Amino acid sequence: MLVLLGIGVVVFGFIVRANPLLVVMAAALTTGLAAAWTPSADIAVMTNAARDTLATFGKAFNDSRYISLTWVLLVAIGLLERAGLQERARITIANVKAATVGRLLWVYLVIRQGTSALGLTSLGGHPQMVRPLVAPMAEGAAEAKFGALPDRERYLIRSHAAATDNIGLFFGEDIFIAIASILLIKGFLEGYDIIVEPFELSIWAIPTAIAALAIHSLRLWLLDRHLKRTLTKASAAEAAQ
Amino acid sequence: MITLAYAYIIVGFFFASISILTLLDRANPRRFRTALFWALLATSFWAGQYLGDLGNGLLALALVALAAIGLGQGKPPTTTPEQRRESAERRGNLLFLPALIIPAVALGGTLAVQYTDWGPVIIQEQHKTLVSLVIGVLIAVTVLMLWLRPPLLAPLQEGRRLMDSVGWAALLPQMLASLGAVFLAAGVGDQVGRIFAEYIPMLDTRTVAVSAYCIGMALFTIIMGNAFAAFPVMTAAVGLPFVIIACGGDPARVCAIGMLAGFCGTLMTPMAANFNVVPANLLELPDRKAALNGVIRAQIPTALPLLVANIVLMRLLAFP
Image (cartoon, rainbow over all chains, first blue to last red; front, top):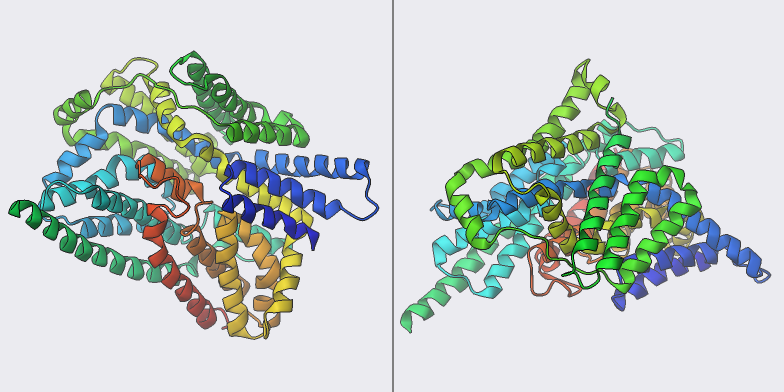
């Protein structure tokens, strides 16, 4: 029962908005100490438990370094931004008359989900694609249609650009057979002597992928309707002044 | 052969450069501790395999301590908005092309390893996508340096500019994965399973078991910020004993859809910094520090119906 204290630490840290890295480390140490605690445990036992927990954490931290490897991408992205990549995206999309925010994001959703399903998860992403390309393009689409944007709508559009990237990625990547989550499932089940092939797992991600595409397409259609309603009203009010 | 070990050396060099440039940047109000943070991360990439488990644990502890007392942001030299606009107009849509080099090389490398005889000779098969990704970055930077002719330090300074804006959040996913390992070793999953069985009636019927597993995955992911960390715990607690063993669910289908139910939780939590906090920072949203920032609020109306869809799909498909 006591080992659940670690979950409590995460929840508490989350509520008081402590630094998440600190919350994670505190939760790990609490869990390890709680697992070792007995009424007769003395200081030496608990010190050993703390050391063992830190070692378990350290081993896992070292084994999962590849998760943080992808930040090296920022070198190339930074160079492109330096040369005006974001500015170029704005110019380009502002010239496309037909694009609305919803339609633009829908196209991105389909591309993101499709490429993630092919294992190309690094094709999108927030530092790589959303900040330099998708968000400015979506803002550009709205500006071309409605003129200068109020802050509220500008940030709403940016939020939806990020959301669309996440949803496309999450519900596309599991269709690819060599993605971490699929390999994690396979490894977990092997521990219980259940052998599954990655292909068997990835094929059952397809029904959810279709549901995600349908639901989020509807959301983007509703976003277009919302923007049209509020921004037409706003520009009409401006014209009346 | 190019292995993951080489990729780690290159990434270690990246973090080490950020550390040195931070140390030299007097505009960063906390340059010493920020430099130390990136130096420790460089150490992890360069020498993690020699530090031992406890050594790595202490290194992680030091990173956490530095992040908790606060990192600073520097002012790397970069171009002005006017220069960028001018460059964008002059270079035109050609600017988009180099952005595709990295994914193209990552895919090309992965496919080459999979389908050619020479691919596995060049690239380590086990980590083909990650290794190809790093090779792609090196190629892209080389092309950009030759084409744009920026100052020699520009790639590292621009990298530092973006890394500073991400800050300590860069390490949260790796830390969460490590927390998952500690939870598993301490048997947190078994305990959660006992609680579920105690408080949820009819947990051995299909609909109840499937709902408990999917909602549990989403809730636990919201708490942990990471479906990867939640999966072993919730599946050991509810998925395996109830949905698969008691109700006869197919393991592959139950686990595949269960993981996706967890992803619905990822869409709704600020603990998933990489997906929900980092973009709010990168996009400079005014409410980026709020628990439910704009990105999360944009995602919840998709995540909730999709969670219901996952429950329905698992109930319909997982019991052939």
